[in-house]
Each structure stands twice: as C-alpha cells, then as structure tokens.
Amino acid sequence: MHNPPLWKASVALEKTLAPDMAALLELASEPQAVLIVEEPFGPGAVVEALYTEEPDAAWLSKVAGQAVTVAPLPDQDWIKLSQEGLPPVRAGRFFVYGAHDAGQVPHGVIPMRIEAGMAFGTGHHETTALCLAVLSDLARRQRFAHVLDLGCGTGLLAIGAAKLWKRPVIASDIDPIAVEVTTQNARGNGVANLVRAVTADGVTHPVLDAGRPYDLIIANILAGPLTRLAPGIVAALASGGTLVLSGLLHNQEKMLLSFYHRLRFVRGWRDGPWSALVLERGRKSG
Figure (tube, helix red, strand yellow):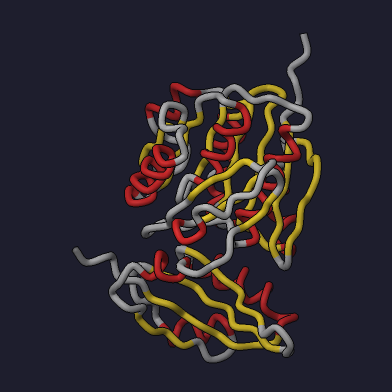
C-alpha cells in the first residue's frame, strides 16, 4: 500500500529569524506541520513546512522574501522511520517510548507506548511534550470528567488524559489515518475503553456535540486553525472549564489570545520557540 505523498518546503536562515519565518509560512500556506531545525553549535536554522500537495516554490519564495526549496519526500512511512532510534521522552509524569525502548520503563512514571505510523505526535516535538507537562501540572490540582483532544494525531494526549483521570476522553482529527492510529495506540496502552476517536473537521461532529460541554479541551494544532476554530472551541467549553492551546510560536501568543478574549489567561508554558497556553472559562454566577 502506498502512503499519501508528502512535500517539504525548506528555507535556511539565521536562528533568530526562524520563529517569524515559521509563523509566516504557516499563516500564508497552511501546511500540515511546521518544524524548526537548528544547528546545535552554529547560528543557522532551517524552517521546514510539510504539505500533502506540492506547493508553489516560486510563490513561497516571494512570500518568504528569500529562496524556498520544495522537494518530495520518499514514498514511504517517513514519520514512522523518523521515530526509529529516537530516545524515550520524559514529560511531566509521563514516560513516552516506542517499540525499540520496550523494557526500559523506569519506576514511578505513567508509561505510554506510542507508535507513530503516519500520524504526528510522539512526544519528541516541543509542543507535545509541553502539553504532557501541562496535563501533569493540572492533575495535581484538578480532576476532569469530560475531556476532548482536538487534533489528536497519534492520540498521545488523549491517552495521557485517560491515564491521569480514568475518565472517558473523546479524540478527534481531520485525518482518518490519525484516528486509526489513535485507536490502535489506545488499545496498546490499555485505555481502549476510555478513548473514543472520531474523524471530524473542527468541533462539528455528532459525537463531539454529544460530549459537550467539556471541562477540559486540549488543542495542539497550528495557530491558523486555532484562530478559525476559536468560536466553536469556546462554545464547547464548560463553565469553569480549562483550555490548553499549543502548536504555536512565542510571537503568535498575543494574536491567538485575542481570538480567545472571552477566556481568562492562566499561564503560558514555553520550550524553545514553541508555546502552550492555559486558559479558563469563568463560572456563571447564580
């Protein structure tokens, strides 16, 4: 079976300029994902944007103000291959590992074995690790009974929430492959009875509607979709509910918060150029 083709647009520049370029490419062309690859001991970085259809290199170069190269990725399960050999991740109370790390789980952690397949989210990206740390922090003070993981990818955050609170979690993604991977990972982590994954575009779906209102919504997607989905996300959040937003860069925080002005800002988390924001909806009086 052939996997869906993917295209990568790359632009090399100084590290200090990378976050702005990543934000520009995301907002201008709506890629599947944006990555910043930095030189460990040098001043340079490469911003990479991934697409399901070939983007126009000339147009991207014009938007970026400098040369952007576009090349197809090999017709193979590149995401799965990219995870092979990666070290396990400690984030908050969680220990995330792949098949190649089985047997190395330390004591005193919440283990999650995640296989990427063709879905994004293994804990190695800063935004996913940030969200796991946020969930661990929230669990020290609160319990949540109605949880939605919007844009679930591999299901990592939905599985983490199910393990923390032992309550049903709805996971949704626009990509049916991600929904399939989430279901498989939930089964592999012993929470198949708690995690229900559905294919949905945004927050409009009968299953999502039936689960409303949610006292915790986790949305680790890109800033562009987060702005478009803001009214629906806010409407789905319960009175007194908590919202975790991620997949955004530092310089997108103020812009994004303006779309969620009806909610109270609680705390921002940062790792590298990436951010996670925790917001709350005020409780209705009376």
